[in-house]
Each structure stands twice: as structure tokens, then as C-alpha cells.
Image 1 (spheres, rainbow, N blue to C red):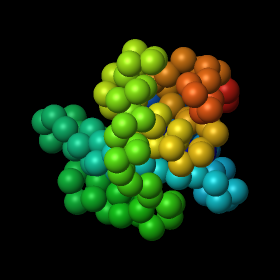
Image 2 (tube, helix red, strand yellow):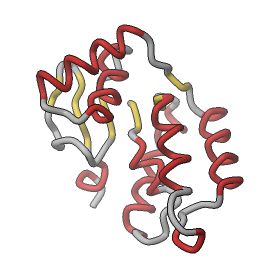
Image 3 (cartoon, one colour):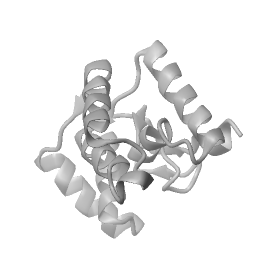
Length: 141
């Protein structure tokens, strides 16, 4: 399974306790089963999203976000973009009307043969190419 950035962010976001609990469950379960992959893009977005805004409104301070990103990279295989991922993302924007960032996340899964994408940014249960999207906040609610 490929875990989208929003799931990673909710693992640390105390503003949404139910989503935090579910996100941590998904990541923990995926780690135990050894089938989670994380896209390079999600690591970048994780650091940016958790550290944006005024200091009092940030989910994490920069040193903590960097440490957590390093932990994610140590715990899970990270997949990196190449020409085939970029070309697939371009097709995803055209075929499915996805935003560039969503198309890129989907393309990682499609190109690398990952059957499930866990995200709240896509239509739950829908297949995009060979990838089925699961919204864990609907699955485990």
C-alpha cells in the first residue's frame, strides 16, 4: 500500500483526534505487515505541511518534522520519481482530472504496481488504472 501525505500528517495533528488515531493505526498496521511504501513527494510535503504557518499554529517544529521524516525514511521503503512516474502523472491529470500533486501520488502507485493508495484526497473505493483508493477515515470510522 502507498500512504498519501495527508495520512502521515494526521499522525501528528492533535486538532483531529479521531483522524490521528486512525492514521496511526494505518501506519502501525502497515509497518507490522511490511507492505507500506511512501513516495518521495510525501516526505517533502510532510515537512512542508507540518511546519507551515506561524510557530504557534504549526503541527511540528522544523527539527521535529525533520526527525520524523528521517524516521519515516528509515522505517518504510521510499519510492522516487523517474521519467515513467512523471509521464504517468501527466496521463493521470488528463484521464482522471486529478490535480498535479494527486496525479503524481497515484502515478507512483500505478508505475510501481502498488494496488492500494490510502488517501482522503481521492474518491473512496474508486479504481484509477490498477490502483484502488481507500480512505481510512471511512474504513475505520
